[in-house]
Amino acid sequence: MPGRIPRRLHDLHRLRSLSRPGSKSESVPILVCVLVYAWFADKSEVFDAVPAYFYGRNDLQTPITFDEARRLSFLFAGDADGQWYRLTETRKLPEGARKQYLFDAAARTSSAKGILNLN
Image (cartoon, rainbow, N blue to C red; front, side, top):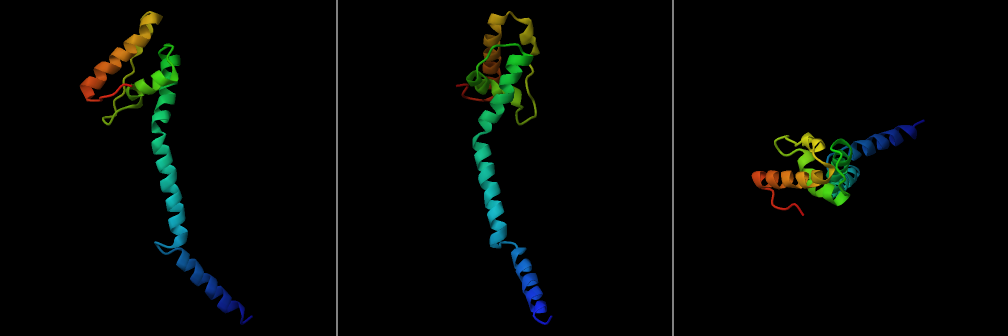
């Protein structure tokens, strides 16, 4: 039994050293989180385009491509003020005019909000 007490003390010391801020065991998960966040931040344009694509095709009943949804996504993702543009009046237009109406609304909104590029 005398050999077990130092072993437990050693394990306790080891656990305490792992829980210290700045220890190697803490920095690895933090580094992984930062890398995963950076990867997702790089893909945010795609993440915004997916809901815009389905909103445009299903709710607004407008045949848009994924690339067009990516360019229109700022309308449906919400801006810094928390405002997003429903544009439900698009459904009342003839099917051929809906896509053009969306891009005209995007151009008006981007010029009013100071967004430079719709490409």
